[in-house]
Image (cartoon, rainbow, N blue to C red; front, side, top):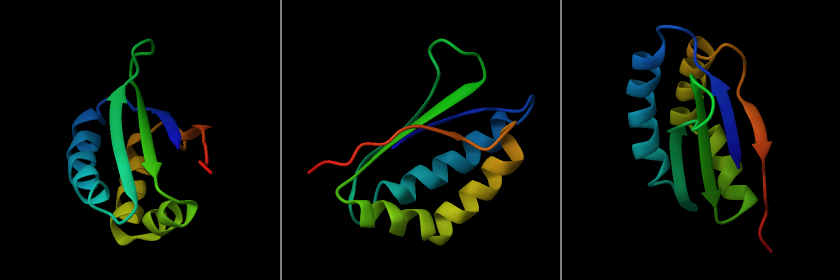
Length: 92
């Protein structure tokens, strides 16, 4: 699953602080194969997140977990608009 969002001016510090804690927990979640976040190489202020899960159920469980809900609340404060889902692939 790949998402991207544009940070509000001045929100970088709050976003990165919350992201650090979120990634530490998410990467230990059952079914997480990898979870990365990086600034866009071509668009200033845009962050991209890529998460790989061993099953759709693992992804759904992650999204429903308290740490994910807390991070999504911070995202709502820090991003100009809700993150855009730009890719999702399910392996067989």
